[in-house]
View 1: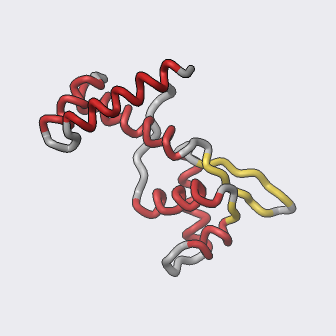
View 2: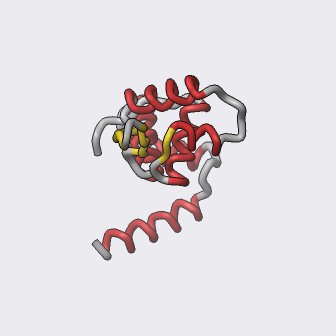
View 3: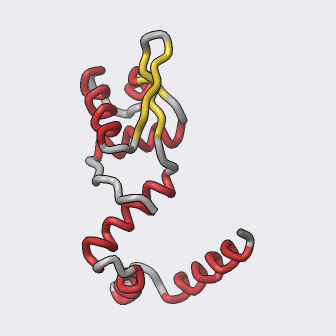
Length: 125
């Protein structure tokens, strides 16, 4: 897996979620889809920041920037988790999973079910 992506602010995450949900969008379409009243310049700044952080890319069509998420939501989440594992667990996924179980974030039954799903997924590759 490539290097972890930088963390996102709340507004960055909200805009990226719109791109995941709707696919390619212009800044105007993003602003119209938001449930907040923000200026065009703010939206464009946040989209540019997302591009600098490698979450988003753009193409230009007839002078209009069209923004697209570079990673799927699942892949971006996996990279974020990898960053946490590297930072807090010395890169040990086992330590992270044990910590999740010990902190009752995930129940042992849920972890067992996940192991079964992963095993089935690996067999179908």
